[in-house]
Amino acid sequence: MAAASKDQLVRLVYDALQAASCPLVEGLYLQDADSMLQLLCTPSQHRTDILAWICSSINPHFATSKSMSKRSKDSDVVTKEMALLGQELMLCKAGDLDLIRGDASPYRQLQFLEELLTLVPGCRKSAGHKMDAEMLLNEVFSAENLPHLSQMLEPTFNPWPAHIKALHKGTKSSHKPSREGAADVAALLQETQSALEQLQSECDFLKEAQSPDVFSPSSLRVAACDLQQLMATFSHVYETDLRAYCSRDPPSLSTETTVFQRVHQLLLDCNTELDMLNEVSEASASMSEEVNALQTQPRYWRRGEKHSLPDQLAELTRRSKDFLSLMATSSDHHHE
Image (cartoon, rainbow, N blue to C red; front, side):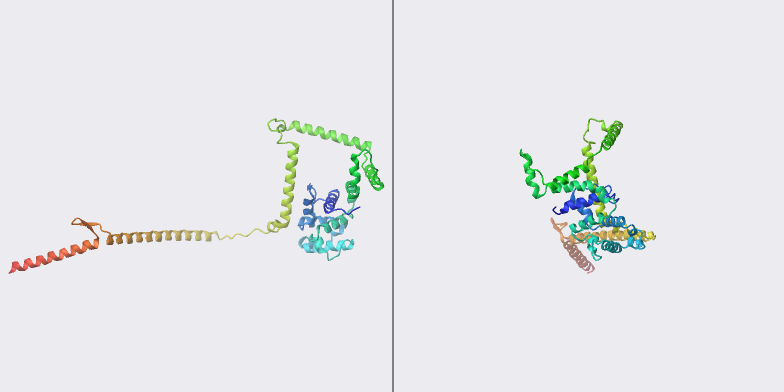
């Protein structure tokens, strides 16, 4: 049989973890292989915890050793001890730290996880039926058996190879239910149907005919899948990027709050003085313009014409001098 592809292998590992009742994958209903690869083959604290759980399930002394306190604080110690356990199990070398951290190739990591899970008690026994079915499908749809699939539409049908018939017969017999099991399943289905009908009768919003599609099972299923994907994505981002920041101690605030009040008051006073200086500058510029206008612009009438202030003052000065000179001359003539 051909080697399993990366997508098939990651599904086998994920199904084996669920079959082994790993608490770290409970509630993660991953469907696509990319999400499973991101969970199992990308370096993160969640992946390290899963690997530590597998090691603890294989060797209970791994979780209760004397260096447990150091491992909880130093991730390098955890990595080295898991690598040593892998060397003891003859699955890797003590120096394969990249394989433990998740820096190796995804296919190599998946092979390592699959070999580890084969040593977890009860893992293969509970996941065996599902893996047998997948092995049968992989064998049926392999390249060497495709001609047999094309002949299914023809009237004559060539028998399958003997090894496929044996595998199919064994899988079919392993899934054949007994009468007692069928009766138990039928009773369970009947109880479930009764419980659903009772729940539907108690839920008033399910009886409204205006919006029948709002609470339909398909809509709820899509919403639940979207929520699960968002939670898985956030969990991955939190473990890889946000945990270090969220674990920090809160900053200690200074009790000297009066310092900020004094600084605030000084800044207000500074702004007030700057506004006053700005107003003084504007007033000075306005006065300069007004004085310049008085000196240069003609505003005063004399003999039907406008004259500037300097010209007007010069004319008044000249006339005053002429008047005083005339008065002095008149006084001299009067004395003679």
